[in-house]
Length: 153
Image (cartoon, rainbow, N blue to C red):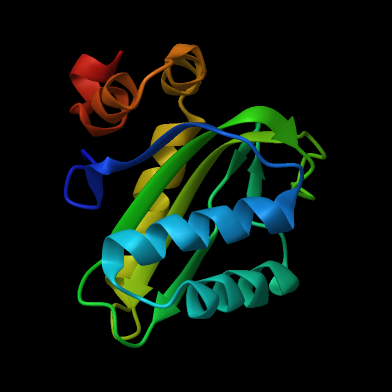
């Protein structure tokens, strides 16, 4: 399943410079706020609350921070490749360099979980992760993330 319904071409950050998890979440919240018209502080607070429940670093250098926003109209995705891997308190202890932020409307329910599973499945694919790490520009990353699975290989 392609992610084109969650992710816009302008929602890709090809080389995000951050020094840690909190700064990464702040930068992502600011960018998401620009693109969604939501408040960056509200987004950041929701992401931090979710991290307190347990890290969204899912392993293999990948994190999928996520949360629900009351005023959001539809599911929203934002992808960033970090210039330098950071400690994200990931489940496997590995530093994170690929981050997919997922925001959902408060009433999204199952759609939020389906989107989360879709993102996790895609990023867990070693070929996809390698292509994202090798890509230097947003267009190439967008293509890797939104291609139908057969052509992403």
